[in-house]
Length: 354
Ligand SMILES: Cc1cc2nc3c(=O)[nH]c(=O)nc-3n(C[C@H](O)[C@H](O)[C@H](O)COP(=O)(O)OP(=O)(O)OC[C@H]3O[C@@H](n4cnc5c(N)ncnc54)[C@H](O)[C@@H]3O)c2cc1C
Image (cartoon, rainbow, N blue to C red; front, side, top):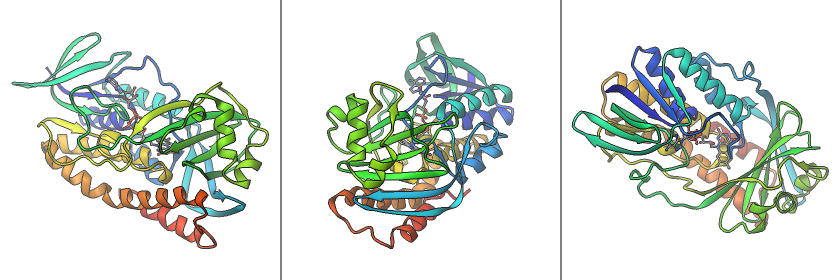
């Protein structure tokens, strides 16, 4: 019987594992991937995520992140740009997740990679986990499986809607800017990769057809949405034949207060913020830290979920508004001259209070 089992070693699970292990708790961190790898993410890291990482002893620049100083938006023939009102980085998830797993082990957590948790059931003393490599008994569980629900523990009320796509590109140099590109059916984010080239990531509503299956079709779809997109992507050479994809993203989901005792949901299992805000990693990190604090203070899962619901409400609302505005742009919605101040406002309001 171990004290806490953490299922999933993304930013949320790793943050919880590091904080609990540093406080002297026995922690087992279980991750189904054998090693950190590419995942569908825009990889924009804002100031709140950086603050949480620094608290864990990890610095975005030292991890290889590129500083981002500007934001641009292109819609139809129009475009607007503004200086980001906070420090931000382009940091590939493979680098971030890998560094956080190493930090969890250094803090004293036991890390088992390549072990998928197949089921988690309550029993008299806590939780019984069935994994591909035998059973684990734990007093409590931190559920940090991200986009993927653990069998038997669906996110109640989650609307399975959007499709996420990601493609690495050569021949595109976005400089120190993150660029938002609305197009018919969704919007994309483009930003530099530390080794050169760019990461193009998109959230689409509804069916994607060939866009999801073919890198060329994906690029053409986004380039068709704006003059800025067409210009930036003109010389793009896709690094993969088809984009990485993740389906059924329940944007706007927030965990209620109900749920079994001893099961703490964090990251995308607690709330799924629309991708426009670039705050998913910050929410994941801060929720992992908040769950660890609740466990250390002997606060029950329901109390933690209620507190997290309140804390994430503002950023979730503002991000939903920003995403809605972006989705209207290809239909001729007048983003106009007020876009830059409005985007700065949304960028400020989606920050997580530390
Ligand atoms: C299209 C798109 C673009 C985005 N862009 C950004 C952005 O630019 N900036 C930003 O901050 N956020 C962004 N996000 C959001 C961000 O990616 C997520 O919010 C964040 O990854 C959530 O972290 P997490 O730790 O909860 O989950 P994840 O990062 O998904 O990690 C979950 C981990 O659990 C593991 N796992 C799953 N099931 C099991 C199991 N049964 N057993 C063991 N292990 C398991 C997985 O392998 C994975 O390693 C974006 C999301 C999408 C979809």
